[in-house]
Length: 65
Figure (cartoon, rainbow, N blue to C red):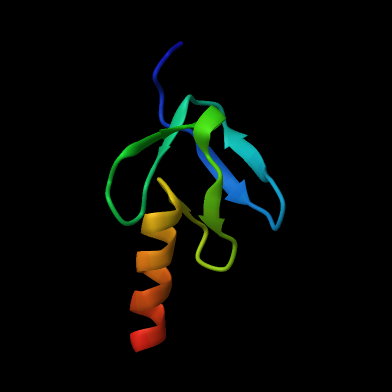
């Protein structure tokens, strides 16, 4: 593995690789997410989340606005 940051386009049920790489960065925690372990993202915001917890936290933040 090259351990390179990937650039993705997040779609409703999958994602499209724009620039090859091995991981993306969680928008909430800043943790690296291997593409094999990427299960949570927001299509509207085009953000990835490390786990359901970060996705939930982001939703809570948005609901408060």
